[in-house]
Structure formats: structure tokens, C-alpha cells
Amino acid sequence: MYFLGIDVGTSAVKIILIEENGNVIGSTSKEYPVYYPQPGWSEQNPEDWWNATKDGIRELIIKTGVKNGDIKGIGLSGQMHGLVLLDENNNVLMPAILWNDQRTQEECDYITQTLGKERLTKYTGNKALTGFTAPKILWVKKHRTDIYKKIHRILLPKDYIRFKLTNEYATDVSDASGTLLFDVENRKWSKEMLDALDIPYNWMPKCYESTEVTGYVIKDVADLTGLKEGTIVVGGGGDQASGAVGTGTVKSGIVSVALGTSGVVFASQDKYVVDGENRLHSFCHANGKWHVMGVMLSAAACLKWWVDEINNFGKASVTYDELLEEAEKVRAGSGGLIFLPYLMGERTPHSDPYARGCFIGLNMTHNRGHMTRAILEGVAFGLRDSLEIIKELNIPVNEVRVSGGGAKSVLWRQVLADIFGVRVDMVNATEGPAFGAAIMAAVGYEVFKDVEEACSKLIKVSDSVYPIEENKDKYNEVYKIYRNLYYTLKDTFKDVSGIE
Image (cartoon, rainbow, N blue to C red; front, side, top):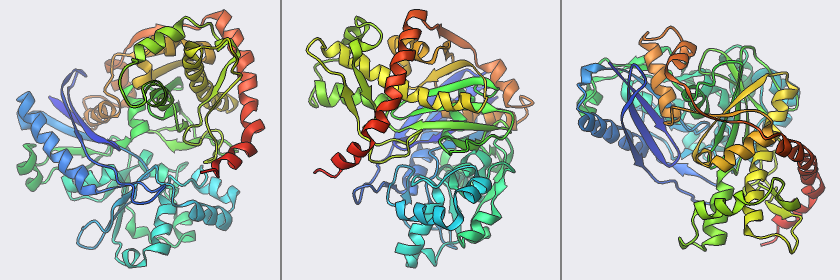
């Protein structure tokens, strides 16, 4: 038997097909555009997601030759926080406002002022950020009253695909946690938040646990895709929770680091815990428990910027491998050179859109290798900021599992291990959130009794890097300097951000 995992990403949908033993027998990816109609705005057409998904499913079934009756379940993952609005005829009312859209700062301020920090934390476990869904709804209410009057349902990106597959309005607890309308502690929509913001309760989809069956593939979709009518579709999860399942980060003590364009530090926990200063997100996990998560906006994106924009000027001449080889020759600490990785502002622990990237400590002895290594170290220090908060909450950190494009670098993994002071592992599963979604489908079909059992059987550590004590001690000293630099430069960041 087989299971389908669908991850509705920002740049493309990724679809994989796995056997019940976890072997990936096929995958496909279909891209679609992001639109930027104004500075700071970010939108997509939900129909693009659907067209890519149905075409991808059909292509994958044909390519693998699997009989549709052997595909027993479908799991969904996707970009979080996006706002999809449907009218009473289930037509999309406007382009989806995405997670990285920045237009809603006034609405965030309004939410915080209206409820106050304590009530907001009590009701949702989080603070109001421009990426979240609730401020987007208020923005539509204020700026697009014509659209607001026609709203019949509100969905998140992956849940629009669920609706097209099953004709059901549904979501899961992990994705709902990122709306700022969800009672994370009690795993249900927050009546207090909906009432306070005057958002009708019946606009919200029914909420399920991630492995629960939310609906079944309808006949029209079966005809379009090659799936079998009646195939189960489970709740699935937001991309970070699904990715954590895909790396086996489902037990207390295991922390995952997603070293992609952005950086995410994710810790599974058995009990609901909130950072009193709201530096971390507190969300429901896809395993029926909870997690905390820190997000830095520029992680591997910093290295990409360094390679593409600074060293190659848009022309491919110097490779990543060449730059990393130079960096490997530089000792830990980069000769006193420190890089602040705030190229797109920052979220955790500094929720500051004005923060800027910079090199500190340059002198005539430094060369390109020092600068490349400083970037690797600066990103790792930024991730450690989140790890330190996790430790403050008394959440154990016994093992770090790293994934994403940056994790392919052995040097970067060693730098992470040295700066974190803990073993850093790679696992055999490399398909990310789509793999986690497929695992959840297998649990929903009762191949496994729960997510933990599935992960213990399907996911194994494939490589480990241990901290080098000498480097660890040096990095502890450098990190003290790194932590103070943001506060020293905070006002300067805001000043220079206004210079055109």
C-alpha cells in the first residue's frame, strides 16, 4: 500500500508517494508564481496551487505506475498563515495574502492594543505578527469592504487543496495555531479572539488533529487526477510541524533545525509551554502534543546572497564549494570577524523589521574565507538565540536534527554542533514536510498506532557531527559579543533603514 504527501510551498507544490515502509517511490514538483503588487505585499492565486497539485498527482501516478486503489491515504502540508477567502459559491474572492506579506502592521498594533499582551498570550500563546492570519482579515475588513461583505469561509493554503479534493472545509490544529485565532492550549478555535475581533465563528473551518480523517476524495477529482474516489485525506499539518514529523522530531529532547532560506529551531514537548516574552511561537504539534518554534528570517539565504550577489554579481563563476573550502581553512571565530544575519529584518528573538545585516570587526588580515566562515557562524549564532530561549523554558535539548539546503554542508553542520554544544544529526529522510504529511496519512489509515511509532520505525539517524571542545569554548565567548551587538546597533538599524 502507498501514501501520498502533498506540500503546498511558497514557490512550488511538492508531491511524494511512499510505501508503508517509508521508501519513497516517486516525487514531483510543480512551480507557480508569487506576485508582489506593492512593496511589502506578497500574494498568490489559490487556483495556481490547485492546478499544480492536480497535474502533479496525475503525473506521479502515471510515472510510478501505481494502481489508484493501492494509494490508501493522502496527507497535506503547506505554507502557514496565508489567507484564502471564499464566497458562498466557493469562489476565491481575492488573491491569497501570504505568510511573508508585511502590509498588516497597523492591524497587529490594533490587536495588541485592543486585547493587551496578557490577554493575547492567554488566548493564543503568541503575539500579533504581520505574518499571521488574523491581522490579514482585519486588513481586508478595513481596505476591501466589498470583499469582506462576501466572505463565506476562511481557509489556509493547504486547506484550500483539501477543499478541492474532498469538498470539506477543514484544517488541523498545527496550522490553525498560526492564525492568532486559535486556543493553542485547548486545541480549538478561540471564541474570545473571534468575538474580540468581530470575526464570525462560522467562517472558520472545522479543526481536526493531524492524523484524523477529514474527508474523502470526490469523484470529479478522482477523474481528474487518477486517484480513487473515497481515498482518505487526513488533517496534515503546517509546513514546520510536518517537517518535524519528517525528521522524527516528535519526542521531548529532540530539537530540529531547518536550515533553509529562513531558519527554524523547533522543539517538541509533551506539555503546553509559553515563552512569557513571546519570543518563540507556541503551537500545537502534529503528534497530538505541542511545540515551540523560533524563526530567523535569513539563514541559508545569507550564504546565497553572499555567493550570488556579492561574489558572482549574478553570474556563476565562484561556486558554493569553492567558498566553503576557503572557509574551512579559517579557524573557529573567523579571526574576530562577526556577521549579523539580519538581511531581511528579524523575528526571533528580535521582532524587528528594521534590523540589518552587517560584518563587525573587519581588518586588513581578513580575506574572503574569513567572511564566508563568519556568515556560517553568524547564522548559527542566530539559531542559537532560539535554542537558548528553549533552554530557559526548561525544555531538554539532547539532540539536534538538521535539514534543509544548508545542512548539505559538512562544515556548516560542524559549526552548528560547535556553537550549539550538542550533537547534530542528519536523518535518512530528506523529503521534508511532504514526507511528514505522507507519514500522517499512514497513521490515519492505521498502519501505525501513532506518529511516534511511525517515526521510530521509518526515520533513522544517518550521520552525526559532534562538537569540538576547543571550538565550543571559543564560540561561547564570541556568542557573548554577538548577543550584545543587536542592542548596540538597534537604533542605528532604524536610522539607516530610512536611507534610500
